[in-house]
Amino acid sequence: MQPVRALQSTGKSKACFTWHYAFVKNSLWFLGINGTTVVFPIVFMIGLNGTAANAEAIAAGASAVTSMNLQLFRYAMLGGAGGTLGLIILMWKSKSAKFRSLARISVVPGVCSINEPITFGVPMVFNPILGIPYILIPSICVVLGYYAQELGVIARGYVADPSFIPFFVQAWMSGSDFKNVIFMFVLIALSVAIYYPFFKVYEKMELTKEAEEVEEELEGFE
Image: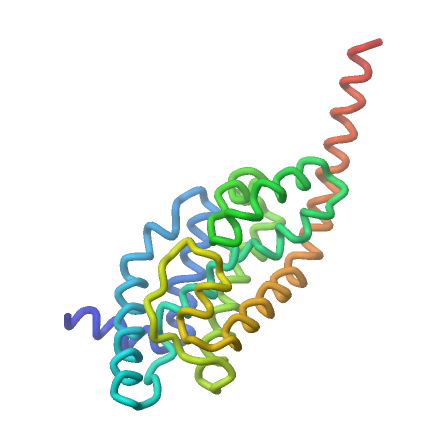
């Protein structure tokens, strides 16, 4: 248990956790490597230990003791790797037929933090435009989540909620506080705002590509 305690102590630093989990994980996804699989074993040990410590404190009638818990992990996974629920919302109303179709098949998995359709369908892998928010948004969400717990804006997580269930259910289960659910919706709105300028640039490129494909098809009928 000594290595886990050392990792947990290190993980209490918001900057360290952001770097070792959110930034590294999404950088690996950007390169086409399953970043979650690579870093999750370490993150899970740190987060689970923090959640257990909070559960023990709550059971003893005290307050939760650490903001380094599994709940913090969830903030980096709103929509899956890259925090892509915000991107799905933008794609839903896109002028691009491709993006609209992707949004419609991705929204239900995205609500449950599964986003392979987005990661490989857009694609996000080796995407120099959308790759920027894809890597940065989870790191921002983790830092905000850490501070929100430290300042008492939301409840610290003390329940090891199941993975791959709707994010709002996870938010409620983790701390039994409706403010945690509201906070997740705030993070999604932030994701929309950050993705927006990058998405509009990429959407314009995609629309040009789609128009060229239509012209080629019409020429084929002449």
